[in-house]
Structure formats: C-alpha cells, structure tokens
Image (tube, rainbow, N blue to C red; front, side, top):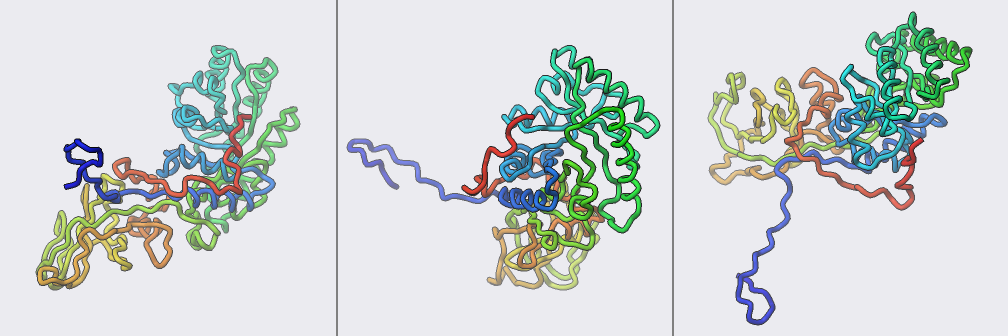
Length: 412
C-alpha cells in the first residue's frame, strides 16, 4: 500500500488503475473521414461536396464526422430530418445544411429560425412559407423533382406549377430557392440505362427553371456512386454519404480500389473460451453441432448491438485469424469455433483477446462487406445498424496542421 508524500498524512492513497480498453466499441478514425472527403472532392471538382451525415453519420456519429468533413473541404452538410439538422446547429456547426425528408409534423419554424435549408417536393411549400412569416425571415429551400426514383420529389407533371408558386413567394421575399435537386436510383449499377434517363430529365427540369428566370445557387443530383463514376452528373454539388465513410457502393470494386478508407472498426474482447465434445450444439435452435472435440470462443456482441441475427458465418478476427460465427446469433452474444485447442490441459486460450468484427480490411481482416454478404444485405446497413450500446471511440480527432479546421464553417 502506498501513502501520500505529505508528512503526517496517513490516509492510504488509492492506487491508480491501469488503463483498460472498452469491452466493446466502434472505433471511428476521423483521419479516414478527412481522407475520403479529400479524395471525393478531388474527383468532384469543380463541384463542391455535401457530406451526408444523416442517421447519426451512418452510425459513425454525426457531429464528429461533420466537423472532420468540413475541416477537410466539404462545404455543405446533408441530413434527412430537420431534427438531425437542429442537433448539428445545437453543436455549434454553422455550415450550409440541408434537410430533405419531412412530415406534416416537422418543425419548419425551427428550421427557418436556425438557417437550415429545407428540401421541398411540393406539399411542404405552404407550411414553409407560414414558418417564414412566423419567424419574420425568408426560408431557404431546395426544390426536389422526381426524375425516376419514385419516392420524394415533385412529379414532372406538377413541376411547372411548383416552380411558379415558389417564384411568387421568392418575389414576395418569403423564401429563396437556393437549390434544385433530384436523386438517382441505380447509379451503383453503372451499366444500367436509367441513370442516363434521369440525367436527361433533370437537365430538362433545369432548363424549364432557367427559362422561367430562376437562378439557383446549387444544382445537385450525384450520390456517391455517381460522384465516382459519372462526372456528367456532378453539376454544382455532389452529395456523398457512403463514400464519406470509406465504403464502396459498387459490387465489383473495393474501397481500396476506389481510394477510400473505411472509418469504422467494430471490436470487442472474447468473453469465454472452453473445450466441448463432438456433437455439442451451439446457440438457440442447436442448428450447429461441433464435428469433433473443439474449442468455442464467446463473442459478447449480438443483434441488440446491431449484428444481423441472420449473419451466421460472418467473420470475427482474433489473433490474426478470421473465424466464422457458428450457430444462431443471439441478442447479446455469438460463438466462434476455434478448432481443437485443449484449453483445459493448458492449450492456447483466447479469453480476453481482442475480437474484430469488421474494419478497414487490411492484412486480410474482415470488412463490412463480409458481414453484408453473410447477412444478405448491403454495407450501408451493416454500419448504420450498430447500436448505441456499442460506445463510439474517436481516434485522430485533430486534423493535420496543413488543413484548415474552419473550412466550410461559415453559413451561406
């Protein structure tokens, strides 16, 4: 037991506990985010980059990702909901910021008050104007047109009337049409003709707006796959989501081949390691039984942490080896089969060893794409579904001295 140095003070000093890694964490490399922004900005130039940080930054953390993206040259931010945009404003981020998915209950007044740009497909226009009157300041809107995705956006048949109505309100000083935009349906499949069709229709829509005297600040259509593969879709601004996080949108190309770096690594530590006999059933349903005497490792992550329940076979890397998950993934845990180790007799145990579900894929490590394949889904879903029960830990938080940390911070 140690004691303080001050004479006469005999109270025992509490020993300093050694630093311990988290039991589980999603480690977010903000330098990877900055690298990806620089890469995408170079591809998109002279178009500007909107960093899409909806869904809490695709699970990476909207505020840290937004700051990193802006420091690396992104000039806009994009989210789905006004509530997401308000959270960014509350964090002190003042960059141009667009929210595009609304309901009749969305807080348009708060958006106008916070200088948030509002996507408008038509029905929202009256509510936006009412909010502008209430706040006594003009709203900033981006008119959205449906060029073929069939979701949000004004139909081609209603475009003329929406345009005319918006221009009337703009002439009255109630709003400014900052942008016109649409969204692509199949840009991640570059061989398909629908992207050409959507692009042609978008050009027609812009021509109608130009002929009507509208001069928007930004025209935007390209998502990450179009940014990387279709320079003719770049216009004034590209909206990059998946690529911002270092993931590939293309089935036939890896992140590395696109010059991108995955930013998220999901890891934990092995929580049990034991020998079992041949024929041992594993997890609910006993759908997997061991083929012989073997050693099982318990991984304390499950579907409550965002691991897909149907992802049996997904890889977990421990001590340089990728082991597939065996048996059914449970709410809090899953199992890997390590082969015969004879832990009880002193064989190698991996209790407490780091276990990586996915990361950047270097040195043969597992990736989000590997888990997407195991679960029959896409890499977008794998990263966005990692739950808040898995703490986020940020590394490389400060940009290098050669970068301007305030880039893009001024509101337009």
